[in-house]
Length: 360
Ligand code: NAD
Ligand code: TYD
Image 1 (spheres, rainbow, N blue to C red):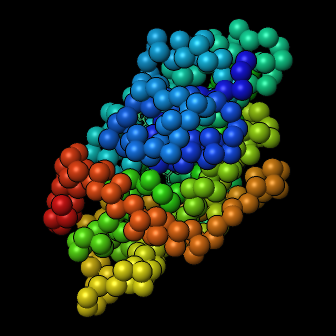
Image 2: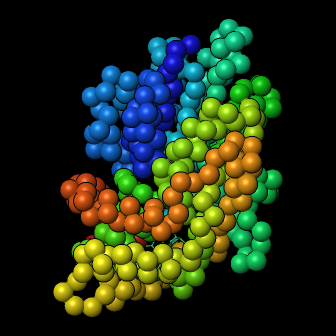
């Protein structure tokens, strides 16, 4: 085995933040396998693309020939599986891709890994890790007074996205219990930060605000999400990879529950300071639109296990992280312009027209 890890989905939002940090920290070779769907973008990897320790391969986690051949060639000590279809609204419009990548793709990755892992010597076998990156959405929706999700909370996924992630989590678990594969699963709350595709709430609001477009709030805006800065999520994954107990699940979150409307107000207030409009506030652009079908009311992560057992804690508060994020978007408008051309416009038109808004 080599000091090499294979990361899947490493050209997407969280995966690219992870790959960039891994290379900058000098942690060894990283083979980055990504299909480059609409969500994958090589521009996210511009800082590491020339680095000898970063190897990018365009491909699908569901490819039955490619995955075994990558494992034979690179002999990794770990796989970190970020690759997924990740947007709830897209899963409502077209669930098939979610089943294909999140379930069948993860199954293919597990099967290929099982064959590779089975052929390792005893010590390499014991040291190998398969880390599956998942979401708090598998746990379902909380009422305002329920306790936050712990690792033992029953799975109650409500969207095709969260159901497909739940299925993949179950497969990963089964590969440990049935075959003894050294797996780790992390379930994280909503991330935000650099390279976040502007179909998701925070980057969409920044983008629309700066372009004088409506800021669409689904329903009454009182739904609660628990926000974590992406750099903190990546640090937590590195910690779990290094010290997590095989077969265990770790919930990752920043203890930052916010109602959507509060998040949007915060973004408007920062933008009012950083890039004031000629008259009025960005808050004037807020528009309430038709709700998401089956919209989960509240997510909240109880992150006490990872803190207690592995000593991980987020470095950013919501206030510091959101300020950094707005600054990043203001200084990376070329990146935003690049990703909001082409297919993006079709999506915006599909998703918001039915909500009675013309945003594109
Ligand atoms: P993303 O949509 O930004 O990126 C996904 C990446 O996977 C893209 O680069 C895409 O090209 C790639 N990909 C898609 N299908 C593929 C396939 N079949 N083979 C290879 N690559 C493929 O998603 P993200 O927000 O970076 O999320 C990454 C992971 O983290 C996902 O598994 C998601 O469920 C999980 N997660 C996300 C959040 C969040 O707030 N974004 C929170 C918790 C967990
Ligand atoms: P999103 O960023 O899509 O993440 P997730 O659905 O995985 O939590 O949405 C975050 C919250 O913001 C969610 O409650 C839905 C809401 N939302 C809006 O109100 N308007 C929007 O245009 C979008 C994309 C999301």
